[in-house]
Length: 542
Ligand code: TEU
Image (spheres, rainbow, N blue to C red):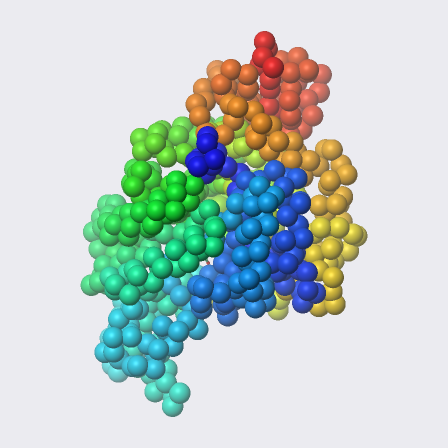
């Protein structure tokens, strides 16, 4: 693709700033830490960094509770540092994507504080969803909607003198009041925020919870009508117009500014509506992420994904992990086949060795497919989910709101191990403990240890991304399935390239060894072991 349509085939690396690298020693990652690791990201071979929210925030939901869109959280740095980082990254050939959270703001946001102060019936409250309760003294919430983090989606305002008054809607934690997208101030504000960051040179915006913003103002119980489009707060038609105006803003900066939607929509035709040429550029494909290690399931997912994207001319995306789901090495080490969407659970038996083999293979498979690829920090190191964080150290509201029955998402947000034999593994110069504790058995998983080992996960990712960047057939473009038998996924990309994945439980024959470019587990005697994938140079080509 041309540089202007880089997003059609990019590899995008998700940085969770709190856990990436800490330069100032307070135990929390920061922008100076990212800046110091730009060389690592260049050597890994990524095209862009997506920063999960870096704005001022009480961190009730790891920064997805934004208090101010036009600044940087002091724990991470300053706006000047962010501007310098955007420019420095570009010098390394790396673009920047910011995260915008339009469904809600923090309860510390100026608008929400003004709404509380102004009281019931005020114009300030119209930017949110304030309603009187029902029942005696309004003691019951306005309806029975449930928060994504479990528990009611409504919280009651309690005044300083202890009297309770209206309720407000929050589809996530009570510290994240939902905005009213029917209000013109809300639309204007976010359009201005987009311009603010595009003016600072960012190449894209990741749109959080993108299917949820528009609500049926009558707030009916769920669901109000059967079928797609009728849900009171998911995938409502108003969203198309909102994103069309965002698209126009992005286009006014040029075709290289991409809008990336986070849309958890199981219906692929509804999903595709957001990817029409005048709406979003791309959206995360969570179906592949939710697919278990099963050849038929993966092939169906790949075919449906590509077919639906073809109808609108948008490039597909491939995602194995992010800051919300169980780490792939752990997921793939389980029998559990519904691992990704399902809330996390404690105590599922896991075979990490098996998980690691499959995660390596799943990555090679995905990186060979047409479209863009997302890496969540630590995926390239094969970090497992950390499942034994002491409860007193857990931070995720999902854990608290579930009354401790859901372990939450902290286990995939543990700070990165860079070097050394013991915590903090180069994450932080100390003396403060890292905000989440790191396991004491990660010495072999550090970036330093893996750089020196050609068989490591990091080396596999580096080699694969190098081939992906330089081979003309990879990235966006056509693919063709080869008939390789039950349990085997094999396809070509252009003339010279094939990918084979073995999901059976025994080795399969491969073309002669010298044609294997890369393998997730080394072939033995010309055969590709079970739970492995390989990239193959086809005969007669360079
Ligand atoms: O997640 C959106 C979302 O729908 C989540 O509830 C998701 O289903 C869940 O985390 C999966 O375990 C986005 C962000 O990615 C997430 O980190 C935020 O907590 C959420 O929005 C609220 O902003």
